[in-house]
Length: 311
Image 1 (cartoon, rainbow, N blue to C red):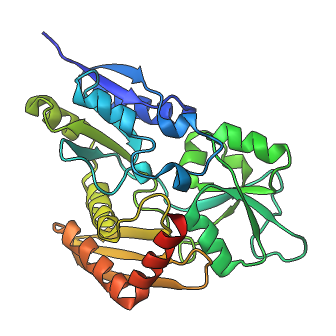
Image 2: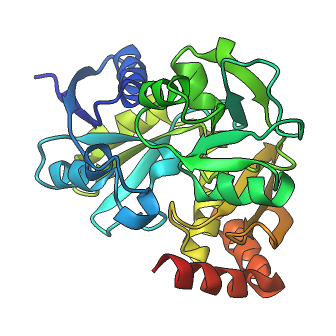
């Protein structure tokens, strides 16, 4: 008898794109699938910032509940939405090939540029990392909190809430809004959130090992996995959730993995950025090494200050 893999996902258009992408990979490998829609706390509470809701599991808790009781076999997430520590009953078993990782400015005005100081610029974002980065490099830019799915954010922008949105290229591209990209932002300034651009597949550790292996074979991209395991180890040591403005980006060249990351104070005044490199087959150690260096270079004090502010 053939086994049907039940794929749990949030219901936004972007989350569905990710679920269909994973479904397509599984079907190409000859597996039967079913998509199960699940509403999460992060989807329900749109008038409060993620930092205030509490970043741990804001988009994942309900999916994990269904993984635990077997109603779904896997949950599909934006890798950057995943908390740095999972409950011991769960694991991330696969990461899809990574999309371009840059942040972008999305606007109906193609002439918009962060460096322009001619007129006041209001940027919509719900990310503390992006707000702090703007304060550091572009202190003349004002920001406004914008939550909701991509289509909701675009509508709010068009209603006049802001001049442009600051978003991940991956989501914009997957939703077909490339023609509204006004500026592709430099990775020198806007180092992305951990995991940005990849889709993570989560399962309960109790998942049938044979099914687990088939899912990994069908969906996992080994180079992306090495990058994300290094970035997530970095995040784990810093205990950074959605509300902490940390950033990290790994790259692979042959057998070498390089990791570039840091932390920025909420007011944008202090920014620590360091790099390490090593064997791609030991990505977690590299992430931990970078985190320790960042903490010793002043990151510990910045982190303590941030945690006092957001409590």
